[in-house]
Amino acid sequence: MTHELDIIPGTEWGFFTLPRPMCIAGPCSAETEEQVMETARGLSEFGIHVFRAGIWKPRTHPGSFEGVGVTGLKWLNKVKETYGMKVCTEVATEKHVRECINYGVDIIWIGARTSTNPFLMQEIADALSGTDIPVLVKNPVNPDLDLWVGALERLNRAGIRKLGVVHRGFSTSASIPYRNDPGWKIAIELRTRYPQMAFFADPSHMAGDRRYLQELSQRAMDLGLDGLMVESHCNPSCAWSDARQQLTPQDLRTLLERLVIRENSSEDKNYRDGIDTLRARIDVIDEQLLTLLQERMEVSRSIGRYKKEHNVAILQAVRWEQILSDMVKRADAMDISREAVLAIMTAIHDESVRVQNKILEQL
Image (cartoon, rainbow, N blue to C red; front, side):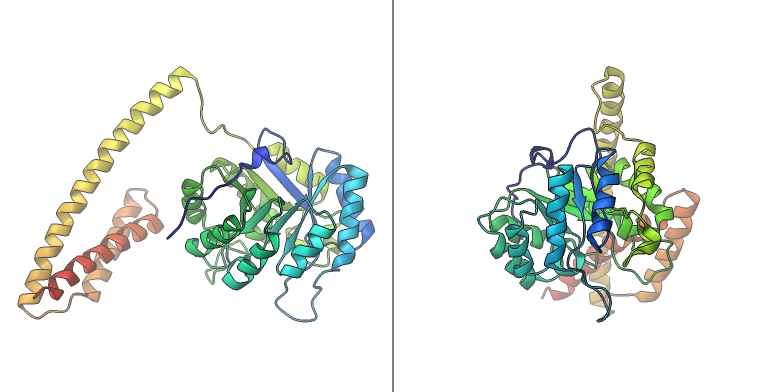
């Protein structure tokens, strides 16, 4: 069971300037002092105020470059002193947190592999207790909204109020052009649940390839997210990690300039009148849908009684597959996405099974 989060909106942290997007940028990894400073210089020239760099890198295979460690925190301090930027890095343990606090890191983020582990999240939350440092939490590797929310709750219970999230997509075995499945549905659900929370997209990890960064960044803005965390390197082709997904500072500048930023609302009278009329129609349709669902469940109860009387199993897999197949074909003809129809019909089917099971359980 979730609890309300007591958080401070990102616009009140004093780190970001409006209008959208808030932007955090810098290399995947801090590799050398020269690389860090050159990248920071390029980003500062067009107004990036928050510089990111990985100091400790969680890698799949031992022997891969796992970050320069504490030495890199000294380079981040030099970025602060030289360019007046705020600095941001990833933590995965209590020790990382304490080192960041000692070196005056302005923002920390918690990566997808760490946010999936409640033990590590509690360790980090305890280490942060009593501090005022802003914390961003990336979504867990798998599309588990409750796990993401649980990580936020642990931090909030420890007193962290400058709390935000970074949506970087989810691991998938499906054949898609991106490194990770964008999984916008879960992002939308979290945004709806906590509209006041600072919400960033990480198109770099979502894409895995710089070719897709523009379209994914635009989608994040179209959905009303607050900002972007983008990987930028002074010489991406020579990067020690994730070279394909990083942009030069100049290319990042071009990406940001090309974004179309839409307002969350408008005070224009024609817009207000028109949107209110359309929303009123939606409300009526939603009420009709609920009534139809009620009627469908009544039929499901009747079916459950027939099955009970004739000793027939609840789940009829062949019929269910046929229903799904027919509905998908109809959806295609109506220009409704297959994914949406599958999700809706599966939810209805699950509820029908629950209703029929209750009939069977009755004496």
